[in-house]
Image (tube, rainbow, N blue to C red):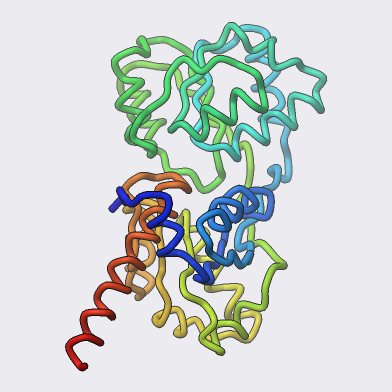
Length: 284
């Protein structure tokens, strides 16, 4: 549940909380800065890393085709995709402005912001619901049968967009833009968990959970200790992955953004503090 707490209340709720960030290293700084503004102590433990596929030939060919007017739509489902496209366009000596004739549709405001900042291009369609189903629903009324849609995405991406846009008669061209692999570095999380010095672990995807468990195990930690901390998830799909792994998500942000996750985390600790206070008063 997203919080309606004031900035002061958010800061009070998160003050001194030790919050683990499992995002990829290149993404973590923005979330860390947000948590620090609200008084939390961010602990970086990158569980993901984003890299080009082993062979980027197909991606490069698709970008060249898009620059030559080969597609009507460019559909982007994450800021990671935008970042990789910006890198490949630069490597291919293709100006982003050469994609100016392609309509761009994205999942959520964060991806739209990334398009504007990294590519300098106008976004024609932004889904309010920040999942693939939401973007599919937004595109279905406006994409016409026969239109050519370029869909660069993670190697782990679901086929929701491909199936639903193909079903309305669009010519959808899915392409692997990047691979998600296990991250490295950051704090000594196994030791911090063993000492009980972690208040929350934030998770933005099922992949983050999978690689978190792998890292902890390989680094001599005990994943069972995660039962004793707040597991905070962006969205129901991540929460479902947490449940399927045998854990209980304490926080599920319905607003699928870092701001929404931080606010939901603050609301959780506010409720927890209030409950503890009532218990203490009852004992006294």
